[in-house]
Image (cartoon, rainbow over all chains, first blue to last red; front, side, top):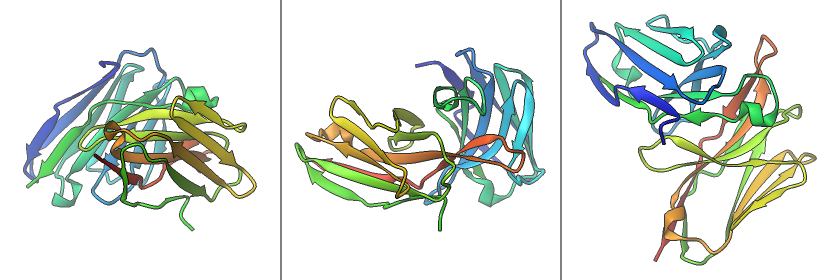
Amino acid sequence: ETGVTQTPRHLVMGMTNKKSLKCEQHLGHNAMYWYKQSAKKPLELMFVYNFKEQTENNSVPSRFSPECPNSSHLFLHLHTLQPEDSALYLCASSQAQGTSSRGETQYFGPGTRLLVL
Amino acid sequence: RKEVEQDPGPFNVPEGATVAFNCTYSNSASQSFFWYRQDCRKEPKLLMSVYSSGNEDGRFTAQLNRASQYISLLIRDSKLSDSATYLCVVNAFNAGNNRKLIWGLGTSLAVNP
């Protein structure tokens, strides 16, 4: 399945590095999401973009910076991360935010497994 | 009370067994409900949406009880391939009155031969 793709799939970075995660959806959706998944914790919503406008920033530290140039692409820019930021970062898309149940159904990319040393 | 609460399990059942999971939610205004499945080291995938009248898809049946604020998932005739974590998902509203999904921690199921 290639509806939502993410690159890279794995990333190891030092605390002083700058890197970017990329997500692309081929489903014609208008909402895109970044989630963080850590062990023993539920999925944590980080950011939401609906029709390219950011509608959610869930108190995410500024060392994470999202960018949504169009409805098909979403980036997460990373800089000066901490070891506790190591996690699986998942991108998802849906038809649009705040619509019907069908419109809210989210489809996920395979994730980027990030390790911060 | 957590916004979405699930028994983390693990549930260990033999092949062919029937197993049921419950999930409770705290926001009485929630309108959309889903069950997702997540395999080890993979992304969540939609299993089924949960409608107010309940719905069935093959061996899987989902029920919604608004009065008690819980949803359930029943799996009949369990297969080895059903082994996964089952995530309960409920929508809610953020500070800007935009809808968002709240995810449960998941219930781990292991189906044994």
